[in-house]
Image (cartoon, rainbow, N blue to C red; front, side, top):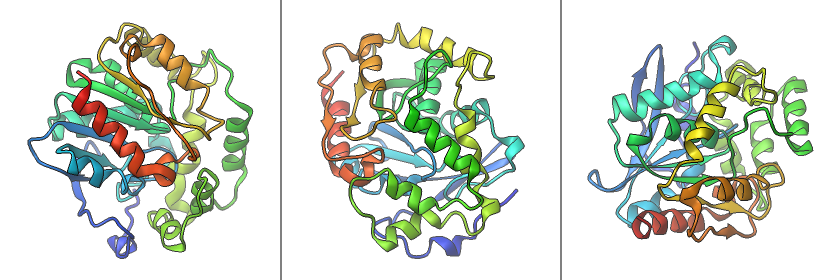
Length: 295
């Protein structure tokens, strides 16, 4: 089990939040939080290969709106522990987040905000524990079951990760943004990974996405979709206009999830896959408006 030394996170731009650590099973997870302790709760789930730093432009917007925002680092990312490849499975990541959110933090009436893998995990979490979840925000994400054909761009990304002898995390994040990242921001995305052996999760996560019905995660995702097809709680799609990989999932979610009906779903313009980087304040405003206005 690897754990990134805290000194790697000493100079993070615009991310003053002190981490809190929680033991979840055999791993230690980190999370940051802001906003009033008694405010409505947003659980902000990042994806591959980022960490809670991705939400640094969203967090202050939510706090200013009176929302308690909790942003974990998925296992294998950020300040959380980095176990070996054999520890990683789709089900394991869902369970780690569940245990943190519901066992450790005892969050209730949660608005689950999921981006990329954070959505794959968050949509499962919401479907499997619907009594704890009040709303869902899907941002450039989906819930693949293995029935659908994945976009060519996704396969290109997966092959690039699988073939890379050395993963340049900062470059991957930059490739998913419309705006240039500063050297300091790229360094912050590289910070959790001082050497290649720390990048196990970043390397294995693309291979955990179900691409056939024989995939180990396919049955659970199909079961989650059966719940989501009946989901009548508020559901927001906040997708960017510049993500060829997840963009096609927005109309699917809007059409299939009953709670998406009658909701004004924004298209966040001028943003790529990592819309939190390109338009984080706008995303924060959309989440805050959704949480305070839609019931």
